[in-house]
Length: 482
Image (cartoon, rainbow, N blue to C red):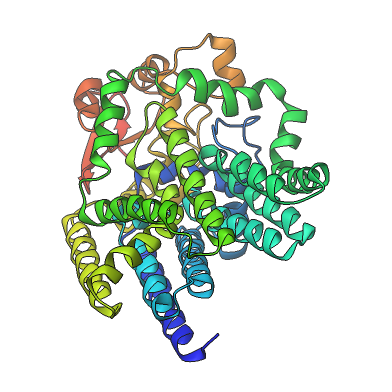
């Protein structure tokens, strides 16, 4: 493998890593990561998911983040750095795969660079795969599973099958949004290698290992574990969500509205058409490109089936779409010119401008630094030993105790019998409102629009301030000020 072109590719991906880490520790923030980082903090304090607090996710990512908290302290930045690093690894693994195996020598570097830029230009991916959620680790280990499966078939190495299953298991044990990739990779590998029973056993054994925390929690509390991992996802996540079907349809139609996503989808479709017609490329390589496509389709189908779905669920398909898109980039570019750099420069400009525009549009969104100001004020006015009601990230930043049932804010949408609320550690909005009106909480902090007016918090509390669009209310009106 020529060293100089590969060094160029490595330098580009090193720059991508630096950019992702910089974004992760400065701009990156999404509301939904708050219950993930709070879960990690609670685990660090000795609590168990499902048994001690509601957490409707597979737990591996939360345990990994808890490890980071144990090492670096109660800070969100190391969690973001790990997510950004995993995302950068996924991008590099795809680029490296294309550079090493692309059959047209003159287009190796250009297609590898194209794939790197195509993936990193998807702003939704950058925004949601650099946070405390499991997207980064899912991207890295699903792509690693693909790479190991293809290596196992090429080299007839059964131990690579075990490693492929292990990586797929790590991804799915961090988020079930990538679970659909497991049967696709397994079936492809079993079809390609013999003996099939041994290959299936190796892959399955590797997949099960990362689920050890979930299996352990199930052995301790089967009802709570089933509620969090199965019943909540199947029955409760759409509660009090009107118009889920129109919402899902709008999300699906919106996927192709950004230029970068549209280019990726069109070139992936063109690449598949090209691969179906050509016989010049090795059959093994064409089979691997089809595997990447099937993984992307399976993940997209799972995202659609989530109901309600969201645009961010589809980012897990992006690395795998980049592989047939690279074939489409070559097929389209080689018809226009023999110089791969000309079409690469064109798409690179489009990708860069689109990404810069989307980042600029989000320049005024709330960041972790804003929430740190809110948390500092909450900590300042919080009486020792008092109960507070706040958003999840405020508990994480202040380290103040979290009242039972408030660890997962989406749980407030549920209306369960009192015994089930206690068992699953959720608190309905009706019960929560009653506690607030009864002035059980010394402080109420909320960033939800209209929440203060709905609860008439100005009449319930003597003091009020607003920071970064979030209201902080303290000293119940019947109490004397400090």
